[in-house]
Figure: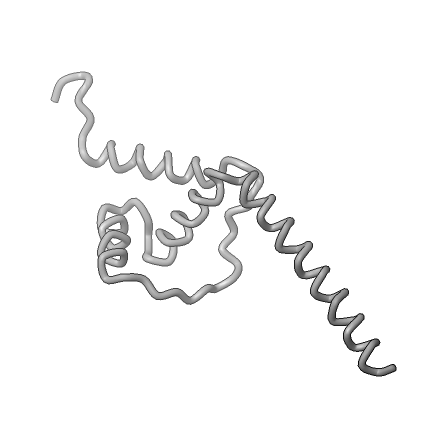
Length: 106
C-alpha cells in the first residue's frame, strides 16, 4: 500500500468520525431521549442495514436517528422557523377553543 492509499478500515473510520462530527455540529443536542416508532419501506431498511453492516452505525436505531439529525442540521434555521409557526398555530388553536367554550357557555 502506497503512502496515499487508505485501507477500507481507515475509510470507514474516517466516515464514522465525519458522521459523528456532523451530528455534533450545531445547536441541537444529539441525545436520543425519546422513542419514535416508524414504518419504512423494505428498501429503506435494507439501506439502513447496509450502514450498520459497514459499521457506520451500531444499530438501525442509531442509523435512523443519525440520518434524521443530519437532515435537521442541514436546514436547521428553516426547521426552527417551521417549529415556530407550528407553535403559533397551537397558541391560536387554544385561543379559538377558549373563545368557543366561552361563547357556548353564555
